[in-house]
Image (cartoon, rainbow, N blue to C red):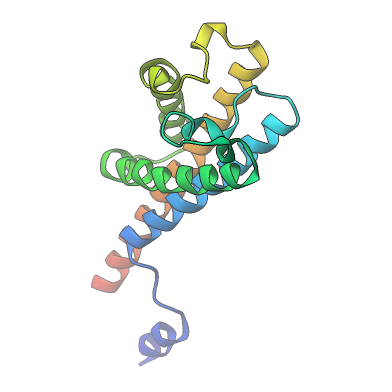
Length: 165
């Protein structure tokens, strides 16, 4: 009877896929906003709007509305990155897999996908400040996604074990 009282006292945890969705969306929006701030403060020459430049017509994409839409779009793309991490790496503990995931994403975007974005110079033509700032943003993003998903996965597994006992 005491277990029923405790179980009713606490809210049920969010379903794991829903948590991955919200983690990806929040992570993408938050870290894209931080990326815009680093551009605004001249730490990097890349702004979030570069994602719209090859696809959208008009000068609106360079203004504030373009920045907001770019940040939201990066949040949506981040959902896919979060589900990819969940599918491949959620079982691994620690921060290193998240940091590595962010580094891999950095190299994918700046080396493989670079031709899709004409406003981003090739990696070694970028300024040192841009490379360092962008790399740091990507590994911190990877750490956020990776640690959040791995922690929640382990937490759900422990709760399932306790419930089965």
